[in-house]
Image 1 (tube, rainbow, N blue to C red):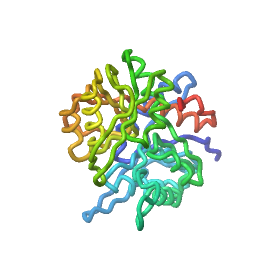
Image 2: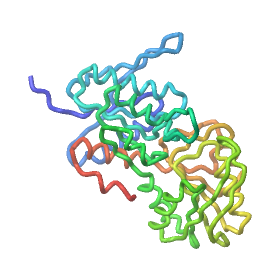
Image 3: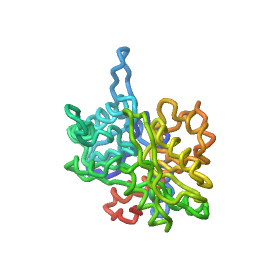
Image 4: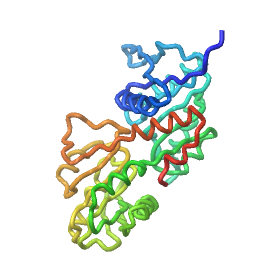
Length: 323
């Protein structure tokens, strides 16, 4: 019996809400073509010692399977993705595509001191070993991580949603700021699209997640400044940079960052800072119990839905990128 090739979409537990919204967007996109999508049924069996077993309730034989999961802490999120990929391959899926809105461990992209691991490369190897055929992710901490894979990587940029949103604010005297020297390339790309100047914040660290000092380079006086970054972790750099920019005469300071890691005292720091607003995407869910009064979520689900559909139909995806 001939079985028509089909798409199956599944979500691991950490990205269930994101996946539901992606499926809704897929149905909006596919309605004109008579396409109907749904989120496949799966379950996780948990043992008392913490071990777990993901499994599919629906058949995936011969299908192109998209598995959605961001790999933010805890490490079980990464392990669940690996086990789900393995389950799909062993269930005779034709192709398995890992959709990772947030690619965790990406800050370990090189040896920056002796005798350390390169975690991003190790995770790439683990995902490939699990049996994945393609990776789809957003705003990697370092672009070179794409080269850690020997399979196709669709690297989506949050600028696709952030730049139109920033334009809609109609801020006069706009300037884009990089929170550190490493973010200068991203800040310059945003500034080019928005036709505005760039400010660079130079920081020195005492140790990981602890900033000693920050110096702003550029014209700050009277500017409405937007700090752009790929993630906010403890928000120490971000809030200190905002305070310094305001002290130097900025009219207002906002921030946009793709991945809202927001660990430790991050929520409290943002709430108490001189930041007017913080824009993040939904690649990582916010803590529902935290103070999010200054945080605005700009969704990436329509962008991911469009790329998923185009990849499945072998259509070009270059139109989905701003830079």
